[in-house]
Length: 442
Image: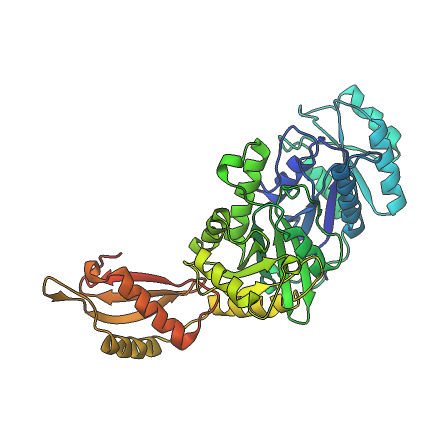
């Protein structure tokens, strides 16, 4: 059985993201004193009274609005309500019960889901202030006075939610899911690809660059396996990151790279590989993640029999430091070739975690050094005594030698290529550590 799901909903700027971060135990959701900051659904795992559950942060609900983004946010919040086992309706003590609060409460009653009413910004412990009792008029039972900022009352709030959790059963650990981060410039089609895969409007898709401001996790399962898709905010050039909020988003995208197993680097087929693409791909490469280069919007390119080969060559030149990464051409809009992505994800994930026995490595080392002699300097020749694999994700190899200064990077590259020729390791960077006898390391 899946983990219970708690959705936090309410109008904008009542403190939903602050409560979400408190439940998650870390700063996952952007907190700013600006309505509309949280646009998509955000998921995190939490635990209460020994029971693991999932909490969802949502964009603020504006029942009546002409704004395109606010309409999208309402749709996302409604989707979170449908997925939830219990809903926390957040209100604000200082502003009292507003007309919007009443409309949101009516919408929640129609959902027929259990609702727990939280009155936020009760920042002083002790007896509730007189204005607190106004919230009984909402007809949602006893309200809970809380302070998301200080944590007051949140334990009682979770106790109330716990009562609505379904019977405890077998839960699927997240370790069964391959975490796939979609990274790239703004407006390259990351959210469109997620929606094409999921077959629903799971994340907001708009032609306004920068629409996705938080990283959003979506669990997905098909015949190929189980995946957690992480849709990230587009990463702009630092000189163009003007808004304080967008700086958080860039940081969030880089954090998504860190927690991903596989990074799908999305390139706009019309624009080709840009300087910003090389920097984004470099983040995944330096983090040692399995990587796939996806050229999106392929439906917009005029083609002949050589177009794909020529474009692949241009990608290889633009991203010359990661020749190991497979290149996949698709269209998130039409769905063309999207089905090929999952075989590719499985392949690079397996290669990123592959182990090679020490005996086989040293057989390869002996043949490689016999074929191309190690370099010399001032009459002193490099001697490589043996090689062993010390870790995975990425595959990391340790070479023990007589003098680390003689182990030129070009010879390291040669040995890396020899390993790839024999064992593949497609889609994953390789790390090489050089150690001298006696402990000195490079």
